[in-house]
Image (tube, rainbow, N blue to C red; front, side, top):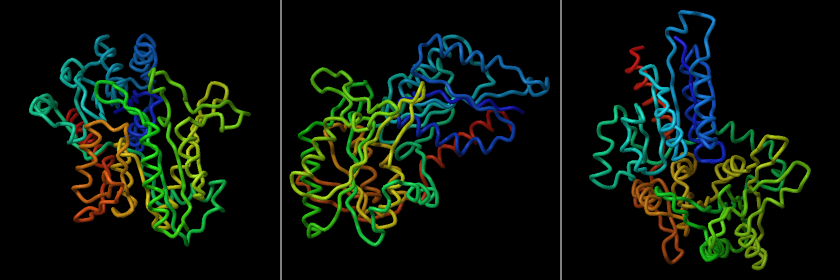
Length: 395
């Protein structure tokens, strides 16, 4: 039997991309005879329908394989849901399809699961925070309730290799401790309302970092990495003001947002030693190449047992960092860009003992019973998809 794996997601959304790629990495190895296709959910509906139909109609040389072809559609997020809606409206899906939809938070579109031909839904359990929401998913054939969301979790050896290739790795002593900070970004809620990471919130984060630095006798270097959503929007107009892009040949300094610059200036003004790594996209011809130091920074924090301060609006990191680091070293910051679902997910992780957090006074609160996270959501969801797929097609 041939399985066509169709990855339907927004290419420009880092979280959605990591979600889909993490599942692809696990699931592709489970199918001996497979073809893998990717469709950008950001494209016009007409283009999405055209590409989907071309994949559906593509013939294999073997007549037997043609007759036994099944399709595994992996989609994620609001954009993925909109694309899925267009495909099902276009009557391009039949019983030879297994359709998975992953969510970072609840969407009203979930109620249309029958219309969407949905076989499988993944959703953080904390997002099902009302009777109405619980009822809306109970009849979906397969539901994976998770702590957070699937994410790409490299092995320690893979992280070590990225650190070895990091062009500035010689700056760091693996016998010392560091303060690692991942800056928050602007984030939407389930109704697509954008919550902004403000300057006031950035200042609060700085004060928390400064307090930790002073308690270390001013000896630790602060490592700062921003993200693709940091300073992306103008909070007054809602317009995109920084896409973190630069053209090949230009300095990537042109891709630094105002909020990141503000935070870095605070460190400079207070004479706190730091290393800043700017997340960026290099535009080369028609390609958009991601540049991020997250993996080598994560290895450095793991190897040196350094603290890692991260934004609570990143649901994926809530599930990822405790997989590598001890709970007392994973410290969540409540940024102005967090919505209620972000807060609920973070509180659940704290209650489970997976991480620590800053309180309203800027003090670190440690979990009552620190607990190492032993299995990531990616492994759980991939296993659930495989079971559901095999049940439907009776492999």
